Length: 182
Length: 182
Image 1 (spheres, chains in turn blue, red):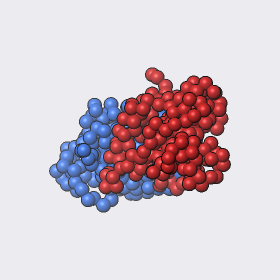
Image 2 (spheres, each protein chain N blue to C red):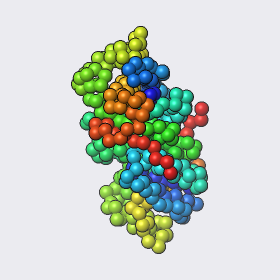
Image 3 (cartoon, chains in turn green, purple):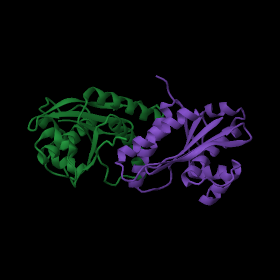
Image 4 (spheres, rainbow over the protein chains, first blue to last red):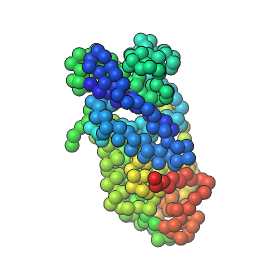
């Protein structure tokens, strides 16, 4: 199973792709899509969408995992973040890939074992789980890898059949969206 | 000048296209993109994006006008709305069209002459300004036509040269995004 994690943002969108055989996980790709501050906002959305579309075409993951925003942020920042998440989700569904969402607490619990873990603990565990020499340079990439690992753990613990786990339905704690063909 | 107004929403996205010769405005198209309630959220975004992309290709407007959300909505609804606005803006910038934003008060002031006008007053004025037999059947279409009229008024009163008005810069009260070619 290959999971592509996304940590969206209008200035920086982190991404990280994790492949697993069910027990061992390795990082296939990770990084951050940065949009120049001077760019008009819709142009930033375009750059994010183009970059994610290309990455999804190159990496051909089974699933896109994305952090669901369920905690209280203010309306203005939620609105801005929503735009970036919207074009990220669009890129995934255009690529025909299932989209799953996890809460920040679920991600921390899956990666560190504790739902209120600190950001640094998450980064250290991402490094450990993926056998990296150092934590990912970008915080956004680390967060994207964390949500990918969260889905890998969740899917492999539910259905050990690997790839087919991403196709399961009805899991209560995560929201899953499967592409609908018209 | 031809202005395409959008009133985005994940369930219903209103649109309305208004053409002007500088003094007389007429409606070219209007309607609402409805997404079936049972569809997964990313799939709704896909439908909105596809529909807007097709409409923009058909109508070939000079400008896309969209309501800027500056009033306090709660974080959750702002986030959801942000997704829909994000894919709407993306469709506009992909079509190479300038995006302009107006506050709800600016739209009401431009259409009714009063920034705190009621929704029904806006709809009645949309009917009157565009010489329609009846107000648009869909509230969302009416709201989209209102933001298009707002930009038509704003652009024609600033620069009577019609089409070139949409290319002007530096207007303080509205945010304008011009496509950047890379």
